[in-house]
Amino acid sequence: MADAKPIGPIRIGGTDIHYAQGMRAGPWLFFTGHEASDFERGIAAAVAGKPGLPLDGQARYRREADYLLARLAKLIAAEGGDLRHIVRVDQYYPSALAVNPYQRARKALLKDYVPPSTSVLMEEMLVVGANVDVSMLAVLPGEGREPQAARAGGVPVPQHSGFIPSLVCGDYVFVAGQMPNNEAMTALEPAAYRAPNAVWNGTDIRLQSEFIITGRLKPALEAGGSSLANAIKAQVYLTDINDLPEFMDVWNGYFAANPCALTVVATKGLAMLESKIEINIFGVRDAGKIRKEIIEHKPSQAMRLGPAAVRAGDLLCLSALYAADENGALPSAPSGLRYFGAPVQHQMRAVLDAADFVGDLNLAYPALQVWKERLAGSPIPFGIVRMPAPMPIPGCDVIMDAWVYCRGG
Image 1 (cartoon, rainbow, N blue to C red):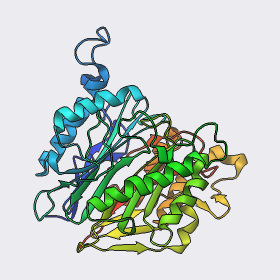
Image 2 (image 1 turned 180 degrees about the vertical axis):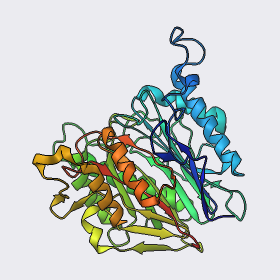
Image 3 (image 1 turned 120 degrees about the horizontal axis):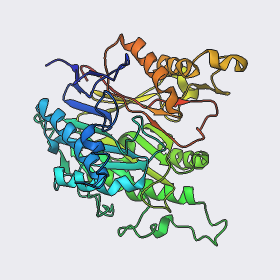
């Protein structure tokens, strides 16, 4: 078996961008940035429906979800995998109206096995008219990789989502996105709640961050035999990016001595209006054979919030990267000549030099051009969504979040 190969590579429309619908890397199957596109014109005809009969058949959001999930099921099956070997799934939506139809479609396909999941709202998808962007990570059957749900006491599961909160796959433990909600999803947990009239009785972001780390992530990891010390990668979504300094202060209180790769981005909204933050995480089992290795890289220190990368077996997880130095965004073109260049290309080159979230979707094409240069035309999976403004570092247009497969891991 080749170490890595693209799955279903395709050229997008009339462009020179080649997209891999997935990537098979060792025992892993990566599927990133799937939207209900026909890859030629935009939204697939089966999803768009008949213009003269907008209410005919299944609802539009449900058609879109069914179409996407059926495509992913076929891609997994073509590589010898199956749906019960998906270990995590991430969804981005421009509107909350699309979430419940998607979750119903997901349950209809996956039945009682919904892997650890994260769902957040973003400003815009890459394909015009798309209502959901889906990424999945699956593992091929065999060699002790059969996913098993862990019993994570005190970690509630939202009824409509029904995901597995903590999943063990070999030596890896995957934890679903966690908010500070109570079990009924009717309010915040008391430990994370600040009464509106308690003006300086803590802050919302500190109380919620502290509770998620200690009350949700810690027990979910421990249920699978892992721990905060063996966390490999975390993704954090903030409804107000101005909360970043306070969040980082709480986070570093638990992870400064033994960090995990970290990505923090803004979101337009979460499943609970009161929640200011959602975090997903994965780690390795404390007693497993795979060990956590922190990768240092001093030149990129100002470009990230966590360590350069953390390796666990054949997976290498990078902290999200900005094109920045200790003074802010890297200069790319003289301000008076900004439109004679492509600043995002300079930023992406700087990010890749240090080693797909984009602040403005008009910048997606030049960013992908740089990937094409680096990979000599070899297609890879990628996902691009537009986040709410502002970016954490003014002047930065792109944040890159990457997982890497390491041969011989």
